[in-house]
Image 1 (tube, rainbow over the protein chains, first blue to last red):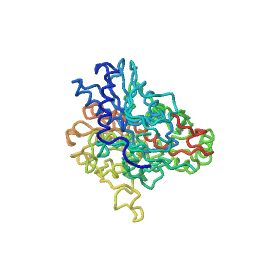
Image 2 (cartoon, chains in turn brown, blue; image 1 turned 90 degrees about the vertical axis):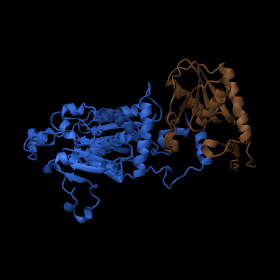
Image 3 (cartoon, rainbow over the protein chains, first blue to last red; image 1 turned 180 degrees about the horizontal axis):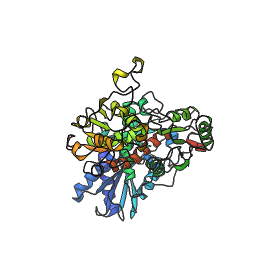
Image 4 (tube, rainbow over the protein chains, first blue to last red; image 1 turned 90 degrees about the horizontal axis):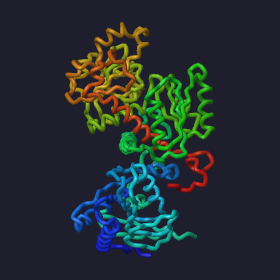
Length: 180
Length: 354
């Protein structure tokens, strides 16, 4: 029950570098690849992955961001929380879209993201890359590329902190309250 | 889900309001009870909605299962179509009820109509009525959200918000910007709501028209002491050339033709001679001024045709932005709906589906 990071800055960096290689391997090059980060954490990670890919491929992949707030229909349950972030996508028709998110949990966010993508075009394929897979899926969804599998309890809080947003890089698991 | 956790991790500020964001309206009746923070929430959200609207397939499921009724006791093309499209883009069910003014009158029957619509599980009622205050009466008698789409000569808050959004997207910060409204201020609900919104955002508001068409009580000296806040602070100008001098934004208001018979004007011809917004007169405004009109316009009366279609005109942009702003408002209201029976938003079982 400690808050020591499960991934520290250096480990996170190494993991991203491996993910970057796996993405290019799976898509067989940068041509026809579109990296789409799911706001907010995924968008930052997609930027990092693009930089990594550019370093060893010499070419930056096409990029996009996707906010799925408006594709969730549980708004009335949760209330208005914050203004959605912009969605900006290049042409995705016939290309391979790699969705990037920080944490894969129930799978509902990813499902909403796939719904949203369908309104923008018809990709040749959609792949999923996540930094952390914490389990507890509620839908038949799995990631194609996983940075780290972290076994968690359902009530735990998995927090991905990133330099660009939080001033430091690490992943911590905050234990949830034990149900009585 | 993950975005939410990040927000928790970074300690995003929360406030005491229910939603934690400073948004606290169940109804939208006028802008006089909107804080600057609330206006900012609407404008920021409208930006996102504008992006959705410009997509090839402009449809998201954010308001699935949400039911909106357009209840119009007065004719309307753009406001009604705008709300209908806004609801549909967000995946809501929208229907329109045109209540003929002869069959439904004031008092009991309005309350009855609103209650009947709510009994059909309507979540929001968009209402236009010829009587000032009618939406307030409706809001008192239902827990459905009431949006005022124009009541008499009183208010038209969604038009004012789309005007604010359109100005902001063009000129940025409105503080100190000279916004001139020309025309029949007295009978204009648009002008009244715009004045509140613009004053809140710090604009320098000038209203211009013949003295008979300027509302009583607008001049600080006419105002009884207790009515200090009953009217927003504006500058009054009866000379159009002086009014337009250095204007950042010029808004022409529709002159209703029935005014001619009201005794307030000698003739439409004389009005257009003295107050029509023309290219020559606009030479006094800033070269890159914005020309707006809430519509429907009478070209040749309050505005010259060449001006309405001119380089500085952003009248059609107002119309497009109107849909985005109304999407934002519907979205915000839907987050606060509690249906009777416990499960919020009428989703039995309350299963998160996204």
